Image (cartoon, rainbow, N blue to C red; front, top):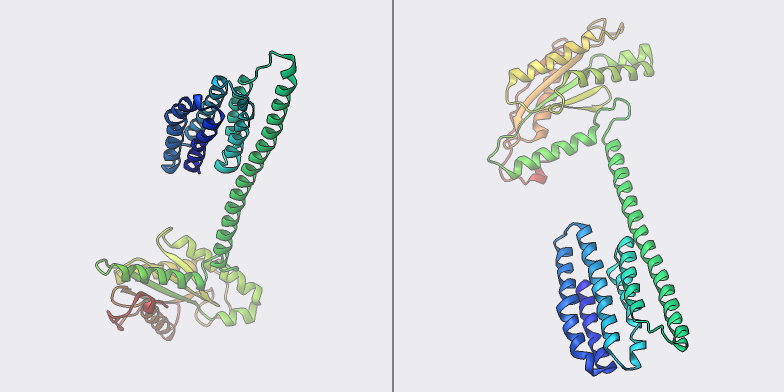
Length: 363
């Protein structure tokens, strides 16, 4: 827009020529050696995203120089057409406010410089010309007021639109966060688990040279149905909240991620390539839940709430997350079959065909 304005500004040389050919060459030199280079520099600064106040300063300087050029052309012209040439000041105002769409503060400074150049063109010494000059001045001030108001409203709407867009982005982010959380426990939900596994598998498929180790723990509260039947569903909800709180305290912050998988079942994702470390984490969780000492008189396993845990790990370059979860789930059933309130580690046997794409390997 600045470059377009520069071209239009120089097209006014035709007006200079027809107004007074004697001043044409002076106007040509002034336009090409002052205002045009300033506008080109301003365009380059905008393109390179220079600091805003520097761009504003360059624009105000361009407006000041432009007003001096117009005033100089009018001053050296001795034709009657010079009076009509004053309308060029209003054209510059329109260009600044409607085409370049400068900020309001910048438009105010630019209009002040233009008005100063406008006043410089007044003859104002003869009584019969005072009314004419006052009329010109009044028309300029009205035009300036309208255009400044338009510039102010444009900037205001731009700022409001920016704020509204940021507010909407924050609301969308908040809604997405809420949609990925379990309403009861505050843990990540099944949808969040699916997205995380898809992300990990896509990452592993994009760089087969790296080893992406994934450990999975599947937890199930022992005899939870009997707990609900004896104490009621509200007490069952409190039990789930308490177990979730234990998971948050026990897991490594920022490394291990806990998810409510459904009902009384939870899943934990870990970054580990060691079965022993995986089992230690499972046992730490199991013992921490026992130490919480939530009474469970309906359990045939223990007098407090306990959990059975199945664990498995694998490398995502060679197996899918689905295979790892299936192995952990099989280990969970082994823990239940062996008396519950224990942890078991399963082995991942299914291997991933190297021909599968990242989308095919996702859950």
